[in-house]
Length: 403
Image (tube, rainbow, N blue to C red; front, side):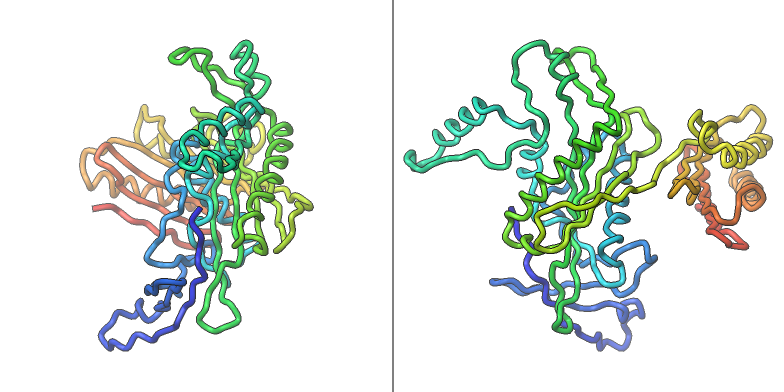
């Protein structure tokens, strides 16, 4: 596994008089390790307190790209990463810490941990395979980094085996957070956040190209297995020399089905203090995404659905026989925080698109409560046509018409 070196940041003033103002809001830093020295930059400017500053040039994580293959939808992929950043903010402030993609868990390690646990016979066979490949035949060989998913003995009915022992852990995501050390201008690893993506549905086949079967996994079962896996991962992380005394935050994420048009969400996290090998209390995360319109929205958030339906009806009144307004609401502690609305529609001219955007902007201000952040994306077969953004307590929204 690749190790993240301490980053020494030497603050250097930019002396070029004609340089853009934005450059004056950056730290030019010196990254140092035992053999090399290279310059890097930490921007001082943040677009929002919700985001971390990131060391530039961007250094990809050691397991980069694996999330695309391991999660069910693009919605889950995005939410898993941004949600882990929100979880991390409980432990690592965006004012004090800077973000770096995970540098300790490489692709081979993550793949090994995502596999099923081996039976004793499988372990023995693997060790013999590795021993046969090495040059020194007398050297002892042991299999490390065993899989964290349930054992499949390989005997008996495939359907029964999968129903009894589904795959719980779908992916492991690492984020590193650097903090300024005692010496001015020097940053070092201050903590890491680990996201565990867990399956609410286990998909499997009984034949190589046969039908796909589904095994639903309850939240209680998923939570119990996720916490058990988290304990094992913490132990393995503490075996990495650089992480022995680093604070570690672990979050549990439940991903949605392959057909879902809204993402899953984090539902619990725990904070492990530096040097500790024990997980104490888990904290509940009350986040959820709801599709509008949907049966779930009608059952659990009837008032919010009413706001949306009234908006939707007025949009559809502009174009007869049109029915394509879809919303995605983000809830925190049961309260609607953000509503993203997509309106795909066919226009026959730019003037028509501009007129429709102005009409929809008025509807946004009319129908939704001031405490909700609303974003409306208007698109056509030619691409994005307009973007309307209304922040909480904002008197006038931001509107952009794409050229």
